[in-house]
Length: 166
Image (cartoon, rainbow, N blue to C red; front, side, top):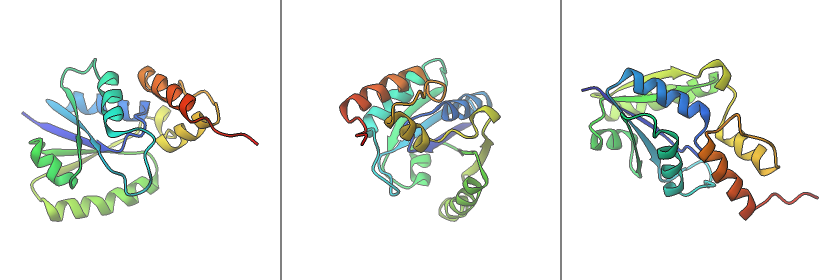
């Protein structure tokens, strides 16, 4: 059985993430969407538990997909999940530069696991969690960028901490 892990912050999980997950689920016997519990780049909008729940809801139509969280190196999480392959999504050239470096580190830390890159589908190439949060924060319609459950969670989160307009 070929098992893959698809790691990320997923803050929030977008239709682009869902597309990569669905395509991975068609390629592998099992896919684990692994939500990192921390983000060294910035504070997350949603807790790790909220992100896991949103992804589980978004992927319930995929019987070979499970969701977990991790707070270790990716290669350690892959070992713990018995994943032979790490899936990474690529949208733009800056993603490639970042992923190229990460792949090198991961292969030096664990040469047994392979990294597979999936290019974003054209309709999702411009979608990023950062942009979705920004548009949502200012009251814009993000319904075409995120699954329905994520949209509901974003809407609720914006009620809790709306953007202050001056």
